[in-house]
Every structure is written in structure tokens, then in C-alpha cells.
Length: 344
Ligand SMILES: Nc1ncnc2c1ncn2[C@@H]1O[C@H](COP(=O)(O)OP(=O)(O)OP(=O)(O)O)[C@@H](O)[C@H]1O
Ligand SMILES: [Mg+2]
Image 1 (cartoon, rainbow, N blue to C red):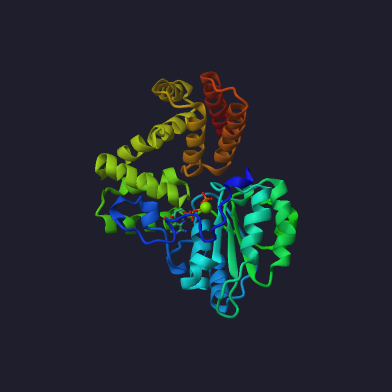
Image 2 (spheres, protein in one colour; image 1 turned 90 degrees about the vertical axis):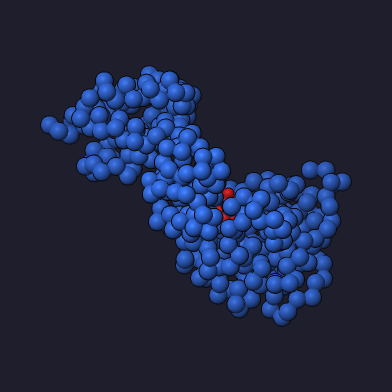
């Protein structure tokens, strides 16, 4: 947080977003295929529609976009700024993200200085200060923003993005329109992944793409990263390779294990978890995967709920530090008992 480190140059701090790629083949696909227009952004249609209205009219309110990682928050804000400011993007946008120093001094100096600067813009347009990952800003720095946001409201707008809106202090939330993004659906991720596979000539199988979607759980960034890693590492994107790259327990094994629990066969179920344990998977990874598989499993609803409750309990215990095989087998036995209880 030393003041000496602050560079006073305005303009976006990340270069990747503003410059078209020179040698695009070297770019990671998440950047190469980062949407440049609203129409390319997948999902959260209602919010994006609202924003595209603002982008046409020009009178943008201060906004916060909150939501899980990898669903397009940063992308949306960059698109918005690009549409609103066009060629003035460089001079009229200040981007600060968690990688920049964003303590109270930066807000007092850099943000204020930028807000005071004169930039000629078309009527109805404002300078935009992008504060990405704002939930990582200290409370003090957020407090320092309060008055700044008001004083410069005739020339400057703030666009904030965060994962947890509750970490943004209330007075800031009250000055902004809060837009919430949700995880993308499996179908939305799949559609985009197929598109990119075709553009990149990826050799894939259907179960490979299913595996990509499964491992991503609604996070587009993760889906694209896993796709590229599998493609680069193994050539063919099939489920086996995907799970090798992601280093996750294979869901088919977990599925078998859950089936054994439904049948009340603790011995067989334990064999599988013991196998995963010897492979070296962490308790947290295993339990997370059991949940992911159980969520989509074709089974009776009441039993599924009972299973999920047990999985949740075990996850809590594991988070508290009890990461032993005993806890995992305890989970299996409770699931077997739940299944037996339902059958009676
Ligand atoms: N809705 C989407 N449509 C198309 N591509 C997407 C979408 N969301 C994410 N991506 C892809 O994932 C990459 C990362 O997205 P982005 O930086 O917008 O995530 P984010 O929501 O800001 O995540 P974080 O909370 O981690 O900052 C983008 O470059 C793009 O390739
Ligand atoms: Mg982001």
C-alpha cells in the first residue's frame, strides 16, 4: 500500500482486454474467446438486456455485478465500457482489479485523480471506473469510495464486480444498481464448448464434452480451460482424458458407489472409496464429487435428499479438519442406513 508505487497513468491496467491479440494461437482460449459484444455473452439474458439498453442510451447508473466465478462479470463490464466509450476507451476507463494495489491511498489518489481529469466525451457519456473483484477491497478503501462516488457523479460512473455482494459495504450497494449473475446452465456451457471445439478443430467425443460440463459446474472459464488442457495434453477430448487432466475421481466410480449405497451394500461401496483413497484423492475432493454426482443421479427424490443431507454433514466435518477415511466410510454407512430405512 505504499503511495510511491502508485502509477498515475490512467487507462485500463490489463492489456489483454484492450488490444486485439497479435498471435492469437498462443492465447489461452478463455482470452481468445472472451466475448467482445453483448450478443456473444451466454446466459443471464435479462441482466444483459438491461445493460444493453443502458449502453444505447448512455446514461449508465453505478452498477455492481455479483455472481460466481467464470460466468462473465468482467467480460460484461468490459463490453459495456467498450460500447459506451468506443475509441475513448483508453483515456476514459480506469480499471483496477485485485491484482492492483487498492488500499485506501489508491482510492484517495488514483481514483480521485482520474475522476477529476477532463476527458472529452460525446454528450451523455461518462468516464468509467472499473473496480473488479471489489470484495477484496478493504472496508477502509470502500468507505473512502462513498463520497467520491457522489461528488464526481456528473462525470464518472463506477462499474463494480464481485463474487460475494455481502462483502461490499451497504453504503456502496445503496449507491449502485446491484445485478446478480447466476451459474450458467449445463446446456449453455455445452453449446459454447461445442462452438469452440469446431473453431479449434478439436477431436472430441460426446462423453468427453459431458465430462467437461460436469467438471465445470456452470463455470465457463473452467470449462474452456479444461477443454484446452485436455486438447493440448491428450489430443482427444474423451471423458477419461478430461478426468485425468482435472484430476477428479471418475464420476462413474462414484455413481457405482452411490448405487451400492442404495442397495445397502456397504462392503462394495467401501471398496470403491478405499480405492479412491489409495489413489490419493483428498477427502474434500471426494465429498464434493459425491455431491455433484448425487445431485444429478436418477434415484428416488426422498432418498436423494437424505443422501444430500448426509453428504452435507460430512462435508462440514471435513471442513473442520477431520479428513480421514473413517469419516468417509461413516458417510457410506449412514447412506446405506438411510436407503434401508426408506425401503421398509
Ligand atoms: N457468459 C459467458 N459467455 C461466454 N464466455 C464466457 C462467459 N462467462 C465467462 N466466459 C469465458 O470465461 C472467461 C472469464 O470470464 P470473466 O472474466 O468474465 O469471469 P468473471 O465472471 O469475471 O469471473 P471472476 O469472478 O472469477 O472474476 C472469459 O474470457 C470467457 O472466455
Ligand atoms: Mg472477473
